Length: 160
Ligand code: ADP
Image 1 (cartoon, rainbow, N blue to C red):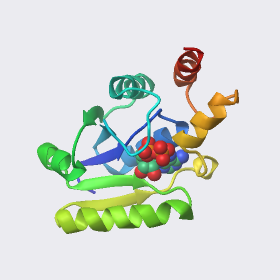
Image 2 (image 1 turned 90 degrees about the horizontal axis):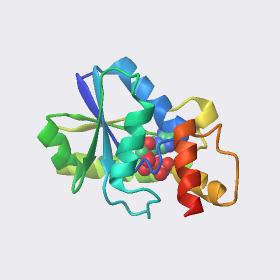
Image 3 (image 1 turned 180 degrees about the vertical axis):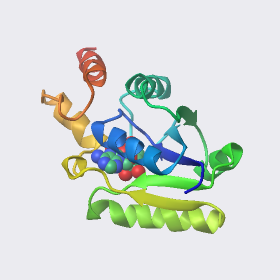
Image 4 (image 1 turned 30 degrees about the vertical axis):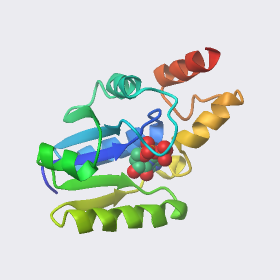
């Protein structure tokens, strides 16, 4: 595996599923850039700055990781960073179709950039930020899905 890889997403907010993947990525790569997308097709609960700050907080003890916001095309960001590997998570079969399209579109636009997929620990294979936010609005206990500081931030956001 190359020295660095990019792990892109909205991370709205970061969950134990994302963290599981970041740790796995660090086993196969010296450096992981967590690339936080400013605008996504989903409506975000947290601003880009808040999302970046939360990821920094919960990855403080990890070596070889940087967290950066980006706008525009991911391949342009990858080129600016001189990184040729994009990592994505595959949870369930339902992720596959979208990820397959994305990976092949990326390849068409940038032949030199490769997308790799990793699977999380099975306990997180159903976890998504979107579902988590829906459960939070309904008052669910989030402690098994997100680190405590993220849980507190979600609760504070919902009280506003
Ligand atoms: P979400 O679909 O949860 O909003 P993001 O846009 O933040 O996810 O996803 C960023 C990346 O993290 C994607 O590659 C996604 O597949 C991956 N990912 C998100 N949640 C998990 C999880 N529970 N396990 C493995 N990968 C995940």
